[in-house]
Image (tube, rainbow, N blue to C red; front, side):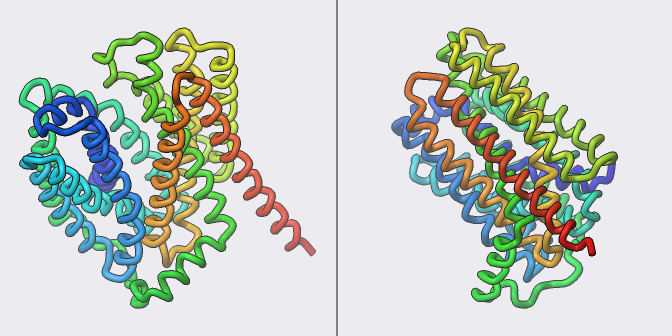
Length: 396
């Protein structure tokens, strides 16, 4: 495999890995820093907020100055912030350094996608992203397991020391092996009016809106499950010692979905993959809703429908991202940042909303997942209908 794809995969996985890896250490951090539970949890919220906001800036900056300088600068910020997290003597400083981690890791999240779009064609980009995203999908499994082991063996601060070492390795690798991918700098990318004009250009494009809206809905449903799964399983009577393994079945399904999507892509094209994923999404969500309304009493009643949902997610996220980035080839950095910000911001908002509603019943989660999946299908069906109408209008 091309080493560039390996490196871009690691850069793409870095933000999600950094999100989840320290979750098992929350109680230890609370004790060590004499912090309340909500203060420790706020380090996650601030990190997600930092990721969402920073993505809006990385895109225009990379369109103006190139991908490589921004990527190196982001990795340097990430590495130093990880060292700060490992040292932090107070919860306030840990919160500050977590924001720094988000700002730094965000470079990998945005710029890896933009570099894929720079280097490869539209169809090849979809293939490459369908390689990257399944591996990124493993992060929710591997990160808590690794973090739990480090916390148990050497303490929570070594979790962040591990991230410091990983950041250092990526920084050196990018410096030595990854060249600038942008063919031509956009001289007006940092002027306020052109930035707003670029955002308007993207947001007024029906194809971009359809691909992005599908991504936001799909990720909102997926993130809702990821964030609520431990509470669901606790309610079903499983012990907290198994928390790190709760995400495994759906992550495997996610990988299977992307593999199926790659086969469909070769035969039928990008939009057919996404539409198939949307239908899988709705079928799984419908089964989950039926189980939830009837009463979920065993883990398989959650695993089975959510595996169908996340298989559909595997056919949606990477392929819709490729479609969104191909809309405006001269604005791939801005498009990548805007899609990522809306994706993560929407998921964070959805998770917060669900957290306020998720009082005692699993049906809240099932209803939310169903609504998100149905919205994804409707949005993409409208995209196909508009495309079909445009094709007919060109026929004399």
